[in-house]
Image (cartoon, rainbow, N blue to C red; front, side, top):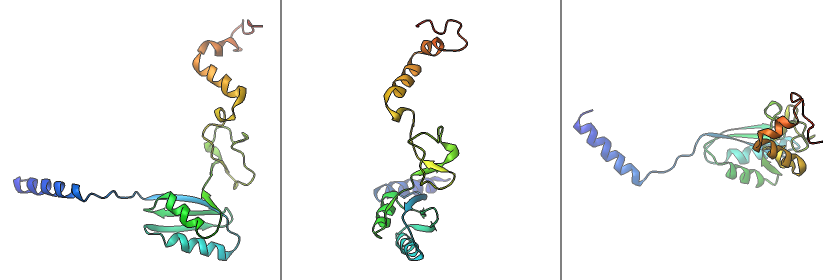
Length: 159
């Protein structure tokens, strides 16, 4: 790169900083939308397709799922889906194998599609009560773990 190329690069860099516009990232937004018939499905698909930046819209009526791919924001897609008059929310489910305890009360959902459970951040600590207190005691003090261990011959020294 010669002197001319360097000056060109620097001038382009300086001029583009004034009109630098943040570009949206290509992303996939999954929604749970209540759809009962072909008309509902078509209405939701047309509404979501009309958003600027949308590349594709896939509808799965059996799972009540709409998948939008494009340069869009999740909040705008959700707002557009709700404008159709249908009940809509961000897809609340994750695959069964990604959850540590899929049958915990917070994660298990009878309405979830097969192979999915409700998205939960941490079912152990969000349960509250004694479980959360006990878990935090184990995390803080390693002596507590060995006190009740089967490997420890004096395990029940407290009693």
